[in-house]
Image (tube, rainbow, N blue to C red):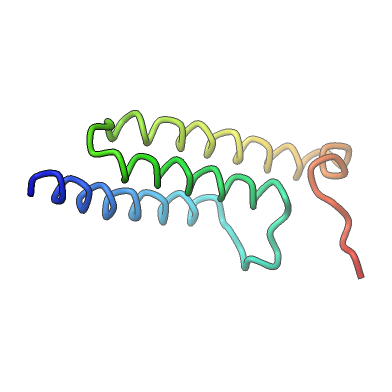
Length: 96
């Protein structure tokens, strides 16, 4: 029973954390995401799903890689905003 409560607590906690992180990163509609943003979303969801399914995993050890990905994503977004060379490397041109 205690294991189920822990999994429920982790699920709610990680959901709130991911909502805050996604709001801070300023994500748009799915169709407006570039490849890098989609990869970041997949990585975050995979890390959280692994942490939720393992009741023995530490919450801090699950949140730490998410925070690192968040900081890297914010840094790369800033570089893309300031550098046109980085923009062409990271973001692809739209296909019509």
